[in-house]
Image 1: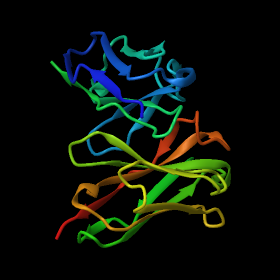
Image 2: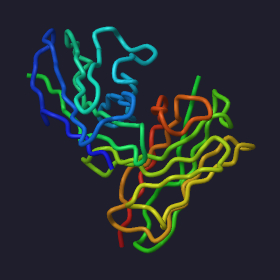
Image 3: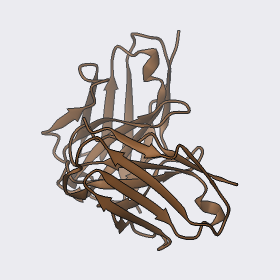
Image 4: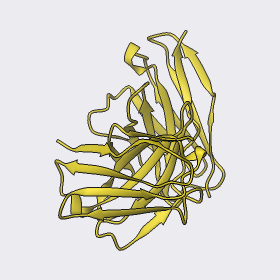
Length: 108
Length: 123
């Protein structure tokens, strides 16, 4: 099983600032089968990034993903008020399709 | 537009069974793998199970293997999760999610999610 570890657990920033979230895998993720999801309280997760760096349909270009192998990053270039949420990475290259524990992005 | 609507959640005693359903619309259901993912209160996401587009392949997370069964009825555009021998630690919101690539289970992220149904296992 591939274990995904996200850091930091909580990130406190202000609107307009840049956010950098990390996801580290316990072993190499096949062919960058790494996704990022956003989840707001009481809502279902929403796909943001797939294939480590491709934005899903309708996702603003302030969201970007990078990385390969075992180290991946989600960057939000300029935070908007609606971006404050929990972000979770997931590998979908091998079963079980594991998720990271999440990073909470909160308003400073 | 793609819609996934879960139902069947509720309060159930430990050791009992429950069946969840996920009604799909807005896409060709019979062409896509489908997943169940759960989230315990205040916790992260945990993948539960996946079924291939035609139902021929099924995979489970270790925590539910042997107790839960995923199935689908392509004639009704519906996904199911039969949960037996329920435990307190199965308490969670259960989401169904659609695989993003046609005919694929692996290498396919989850592009649409339902709103979830809450299962509470308690005596």
